Image (cartoon, rainbow, N blue to C red):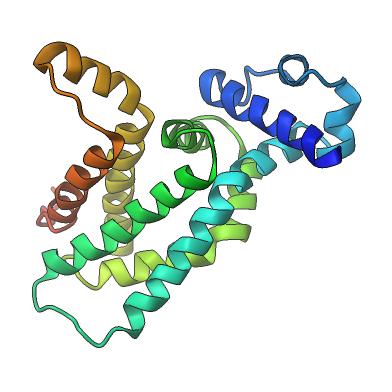
Length: 217
């Protein structure tokens, strides 16, 4: 019964947070959608902040574990191409597969996950950024460290921006995927899938990762 209650709360919270943001969504709205009383959130999650963290954990926990496992396998492989773009495609494909793994094990879409990530960046949620860094920082720093080996030489600040430009491509494409697929179908009578979007995105990200560093004025 406890698991059923927490699942209902998390299901409702994912949808509401993704649609309206962390700040704008009230706990009362979530409990009404989940058909539980207000005390249930405090009992199971401690506070609204605890609920926000639990919602992101639901996605990022499996994603981080899958990403770490795939990166470990990649690192153990003795085969390395001399082509940096080829290696970058492999790495971004690992990230894409980890995102798709989350979608397979959570009945909400990747779009919801991407909207939550976007909201975590765009709204003042210092507690969430600290939580995500503590829980998942090691896995993503590992990914960034490997990725950087195949990118142009740049300063830490330049890499910070380059990585977030790449992340922005991924987050926007996923968070807007439902609308983009509908527009594509209406404009071009083309029926595409989210898997096709991810497959198309990998080489684009690999090429963008290798873009030359422009001299600062």
